[in-house]
Length: 255
Length: 124
Image 1 (tube, each protein chain N blue to C red):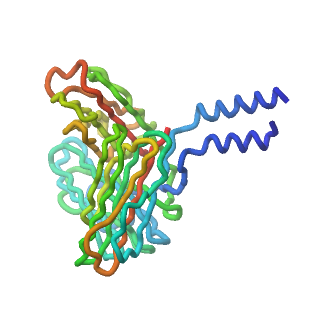
Image 2: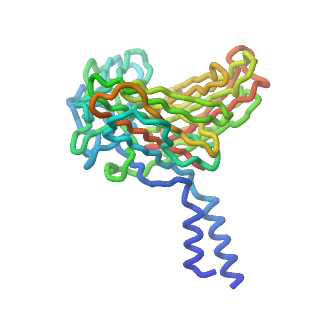
Image 3: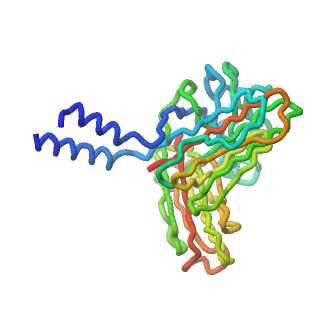
């Protein structure tokens, strides 16, 4: 086999199915902010009309009593659009993800308003579904699947992924479902993570009703070097033991 | 000759063993639509059960009542659907091998509308 044939074969074998390689990475971080700020671009305006999946995550250190609203603004074919996310004074970070459609040359901006406690962090990240809009580092991804499981993992936890050495933002998609059954045994999953202030955060989903998938979608800010884990359990005690068949799939995009 | 082939084989196995999982793109734009349309696939059916994050952005002028229906078959063989009544949405799809996500629209068109169906596929 010639080197050329070998390289060709290697290239063919390593191309993922339906690969298009047009996903791009956009975003901006606003760390340790001590005041609200005016509209600030979070990406270079696209050269052509483009579609993006954007996420916003906002957090504050323990003891900071802020009540901050972050607003993302963009313009689509129908005119100006916006989406807001509020950080409440309850010691819980907030996150959301949503699609936007940005017109060619139009700015996509974020601004904050409200009351700042000591400080707050805002992370705006997104995936662009086209070739020309991306500017940043390549996206990374992880996944963890529990397929056709018939036991709760509780009290044991399963690693989903270990974060990079520095604090980073991730977008998680979690799906839990039980194939249609006549049991009333409802299975749940907790996603456990450590945020940039070393606090444990938990996101929960349950396969309710059985036969229908339950989806969670949320951005996370994960402390560098920590491991995001999952645990599955019975909604009704005891949490452990045999269960109806269920599936949990977790997919992660790292920005 | 054997040594070169064996070396190539080892190199390819090593490459596959260390290759990362990959993200792929789902993208089907229905731009400047002046009529509703019937069921249309937005992707090539995967050869294995797959996980997707799908976004829908329905962009129409005031007075339009277009609704988008997305349908697929999940890993359990159960039919699933999502209805987008305007604005935007994001949802997860577990897709059974050999099946595809399809979309169709209904309602009244006022002038024209854009329907953008985009997403990320997660592959091992």
